[in-house]
Image (cartoon, rainbow, N blue to C red; front, top):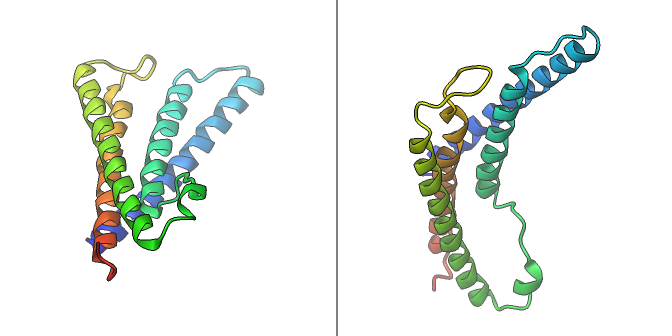
Amino acid sequence: MKKISAFLSKALEIILMVLLALLTLFTFSQVVCRFVLKVSISWSEEIVRMTFVWMILIGAALGTKEWSHLSMEIFTDHLKASAKRRLMLVVYVFVFVIYALFFYAGLQYCIKCIGKSAVTMRVPSNIVYSAIPITCLIGMFFTIEHFIDDLKKPEAI
C-alpha cells in the first residue's frame, strides 16, 4: 500500500506542476492577446477554469495524503493519548464518509452530464466533472492508508 501511495502522490504532484504551468501559460497568453494584440482567445478561459478545478481537487486529495487540512487542535490538546487516538479514528471514518458522499454525488452528476460539452471548445464537459469522483477515490485511498497506519501503531485500542 505504501508503494502505491508513494507512486500516486508523486504522480499527482507532477500533474499539479503541469496543470500550474498550463494555467500560467494560458492566463498569460490571454492577458497578452487581450491587452496587447486586442484579440480575445475565447477558449482559453475554459481551459483555465478546467485546469483550476482539477488543481483544487487534486490539491485536496494530496492534502489528505499529507493530512494537512485545517484542524482545530485546541479541542484535542487536552485529551489523553488514547482518547486523542480514538478521536482520530473517528475523524478518519468521518472524512471517508464525506469523500464517499462527494464521490457518489460527483458520479451521479457525471452520468447526468453525459453528452454535454463545453461552450467554446466543444469537448465533453465531463472532463471537468470527472475530477470530483476521481479525486474523491484518491482521497478515500489516502484516508484508508492513514486509518490502517494508526491501527498498526503499538498503542492499539
